[in-house]
Length: 268
Length: 268
Image 1: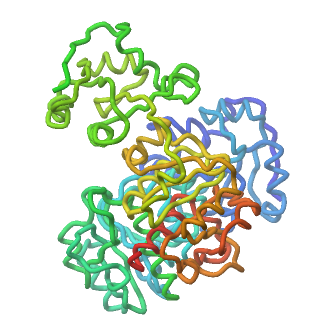
Image 2 (image 1 turned 90 degrees about the vertical axis):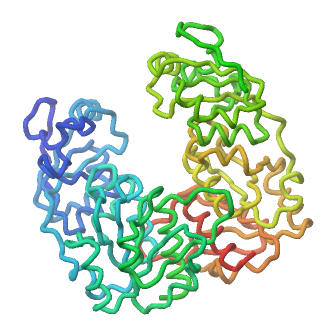
């Protein structure tokens, strides 16, 4: 069991890693700052506790401590127990999920560590919206995608908002950064992956026709600019989701979900 | 061309319909209040101007007026031209999209007006999240869904946030409320629609196997509770999206997008 420590002073320095979570320069979850990873709410905290991210401290109300009792069995970390009011004062806003866990960033994974054993991976370029990243990880987990690779210009998936929107799945779906973008995509091909670019281009073939590989890497760009030509040239095929005329491109996490769905639909 | 009226007093009563857009009790876009529909940004304003929602006034900065010049050709409404600072003071927050249009709610459509001529419709029960509603309309438009029907417990799709997240498509995709829920679903069947409930139940058949009708009505419930048993019993078949074990249900707008995708994939 975590050791429970009651806190009644909001200035208690032991809570510093949970302080000012909304303040963009002081908050602890920025990669250039302390680089902490913050999990919010019982479900996401549970996911953190069974992930490669080791929580080193928790802060929560008594009710959440009770809900997490089994999960915290054998976990040797402090649980700072406080009132909801004190938590709000420390965190900087009212936190209706009632519990937080903080973890340090573990060692990053290599591309091979993500690709080995994988059958479907998503590869992102320029996706710099934390909410979209979170949704993407949630959809990846839900539809059995094995890993996510980051090309150029993607935002930090361990930002608090991404963790929350992903419902903790960014802590579980393995991800890695592709060092030389897009040249290293050649390495994916060597490993047997079919490389598919997703594009709104009406001249591209449909996703269902394009996706023929036993192992598939799906490239997705940001909403608006999409993938760079440079990245698309490094892939085997360009595929589109059939869209109604006169509409905009889909949200990138939604487009990804459809590609992931196409993959599970065909039983791969 | 809209007639341009320069405004330099933030208290000008002609701007009252744009006042305090974020204030929950005073804002003008509540159905129980003035019931106005507010479009934000050039793209959404353009969509409003070509929709059944007649804008009666616009408020914006000079640059946005210039961008909307062609769209406002022949439109006989005032364009209140103001500085970004004055707009922020009136609206209650900084509005980086720089232009707003206000419309009255038009007469509601009947279920038959939405169903006639439609081949694919979404039917929602208990979907009370404005952002999810907006995303759903955006995905519906993108994937050629002909209309949206509301059963019990759905939120107002004309709320400002829904309009914005939908990128204006809630102004274009027709929608109606189903009066007697779920009994009136029988009427959908009379009109030749196959009624499909979307459920995470692993015992259900897959979406791809279920969707056999020439005309399809897809029922979706809120994330978490899902559809009521009552509603599902009124449908022809229960279908699931194949999910990875141990994950949560998908976001409702994402699940809808996959069902819409399945429909376009099969060319229906």
